[in-house]
Image 1 (cartoon, rainbow over the protein chains, first blue to last red):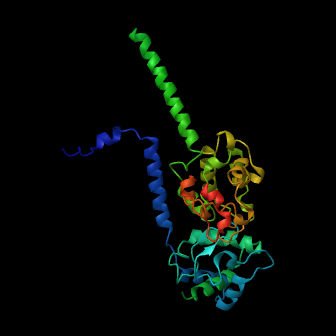
Image 2 (cartoon, one colour):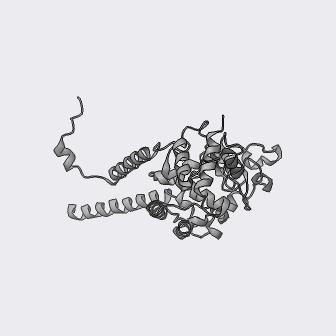
Image 3 (cartoon, chains in turn purple, brown):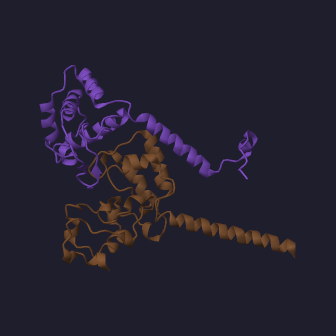
Length: 148
Length: 171
């Protein structure tokens, strides 16, 4: 009545269908995503930029930086909100963006690759250049200080 | 007799199989493909609708993916491995059916002739609503957009829509 338990030879003989490969690939991808997530914290990131800038980030300077347009069309707050304690909205597509403040969104700043990618992209959008370690330290200090 | 019949049934099976395969392929233009790379959701759909690859022809996707550092006003650059993966996937599932064969201006889905025709009764004031803002914000009205579902019965009224502008939704 019960399904026959899979023996090793029967597994070996079975040809992998494309679907099986896709499933295998997808589970691998999922695993690597899980492995990537939560490899850091907002506090650790602040330490990281503090160390690189050789000076502690300042929250007030971070707030000004976050809300200024820097001569361009957008500020960080254009998409993330001011203050970024609620869901933001993409300035051109309108798509919702998860809150940036760690006190509201525990997932914020927990994945190093993700943090680096978005700093690279978004600094380019707002300042037309990469942000310095000091600027990132200031922004982190500001965001960590935000209360829900 | 049986000798003749057998090849014929084989031919029939092959023809049917081909037809089914063609249909399945055509269908991929109208829904999201069954396997969507996690990177597509993560990288592309974090900023905009997870557009169905079938909404643009392969040549358009190629251009979009080779200019991600200047992606419609924003830097959407990717690492090489992810770029190659998504580029390959988009081109494999790109639109091939008749209306998607044309490459729209600036490779914008929203500039395609079929897009304009489908939305011709939508008043210009609707696009300017705070809840809509952009023609790329599909899910302001198409609740199933991220699943690739644009059926009329999954439509909703965008927030703040005046009664006088609702006609296209009531049709």
